[in-house]
Length: 112
Length: 114
Image: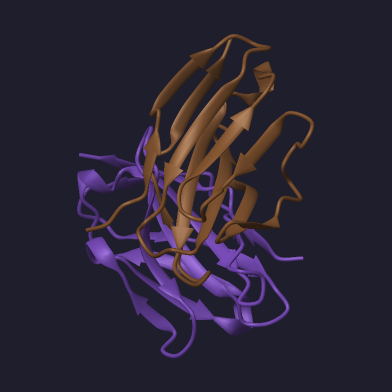
């Protein structure tokens, strides 16, 4: 069964450092989503791609977060500089036509 | 704006007993509705979904959910829980006209006792 891949699974960094997360969606899925999940809460959408284009980044803190999906396949989410409040699980999901989303295992970020 | 409410933050259930998790949503039309399950430190796994048609939806792991338009609810049920059902459960609502953007509830933590 095809799955969404994410790496790394865990990341510990110090505040003010840069971090990057990678996501490879299910093959053929045009829509890709990055979510942030703070402990004890539901996921919140950060950015949504349709192929290589951003269709929603209204909740992305653009002063420090950036996301790209250059060839419309895999994607990278970057934080620079990281802050203590960025400690969370970062989830990637993909869907074929924007209907059902399938999630990867996530990247757990701890900022010290 | 769409929203999702899961009234129960935490539920404890005995193994073999039935389980019902509540979900209420706010949306102007009929949304897409989903239930996901998350084990500690893991991603979200899709249990079931409702787009249209039969309001009783069957999912994986013996779960089912019923869409009730009049109550704006999409409650999840399982007749007999197993210890492996201990996890966090999230209800989500999606808009058919916004590229599938999902709004999640805060989740319900399920603890299964022997």
